[in-house]
Length: 76
View 1 (cartoon, rainbow, N blue to C red):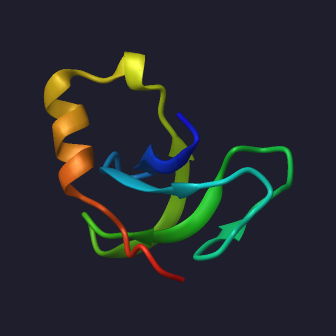
View 2 (cartoon, rainbow, N blue to C red):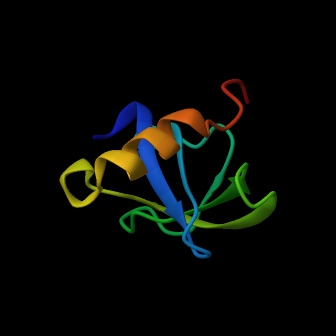
């Protein structure tokens, strides 16, 4: 799900929710326009990393809950 509460995974495997609007990067650096990867801060591991959106169907209920509880900063 792309939009205001998109679940993403960082390279270290942490899950969190962020705002993900295609073509718009308010708090992150898009690596390439057509690749679904961004460089941004991971609030779970407290590090800068590459993140990618995750399909909700591929997550367990526990993973969805953990991601919903770990939100990045809502304002740029």
